[in-house]
Length: 185
Image (cartoon, rainbow, N blue to C red; front, side):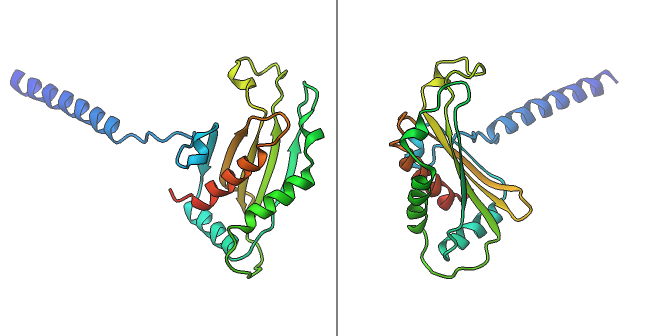
């Protein structure tokens, strides 16, 4: 009987150790911080895809001419908002539309079955919730989001920009659209 108990414990511990090693080796080490594109390596980027088939469908609609989108801005609340004295949402919309046009290969305006939107967030450096120096170094970020017709997010990317006057927002917009159009995970 003692022999069987010893064999049982040896097999149990061997299984437990083997399973732990297998899980560690096959663990998904992907982070929400994206670094798959060159433009994503220059600033902090968070990217998340929720439904690859829906993302692929949205990519096809853009390629076939769907250039509809919505946008808004989020000004600093605790600090004086200065970013939007240098840039206007209308200007940013024009720039976004120009960037989007680069991905359109056909002119087949179909009824859009997804919602593409972006917004520009101004970093509120006096926000009491921001306690680290790192959270105060960027000027803001661009968030690009794609939702399906049920208003469920299928893709979202957030890309920082560093200039307080917003001169690098266009670069962040370009990277956000490139991130969407190359997403294939």
